[in-house]
Length: 102
Image (tube, rainbow, N blue to C red):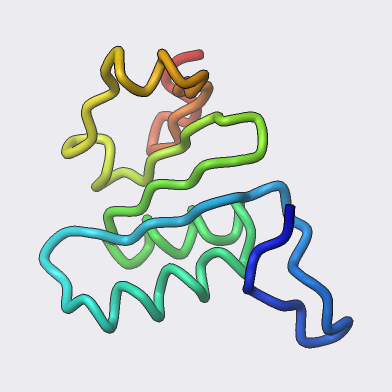
């Protein structure tokens, strides 16, 4: 499976183990769209640091259906049975305290 975000140095889809990055909250939709693309390109570690440094609410999902939440997102995101029924899990939660749970 490929996505539409390309690595400018290769011309191929970025291969960073992410399948989705969503930016949400009190932010204009066009800005959230641009930020989600940029943060996706950064990858999980750099993207998470950027999200936390800029107080953004961001949800990352990787190919293993593991969900990672920025500091702001973890207070707004509710993990429920619907997600777990489809194989998603919150494997790690980045924050000031590192990974809070697995």
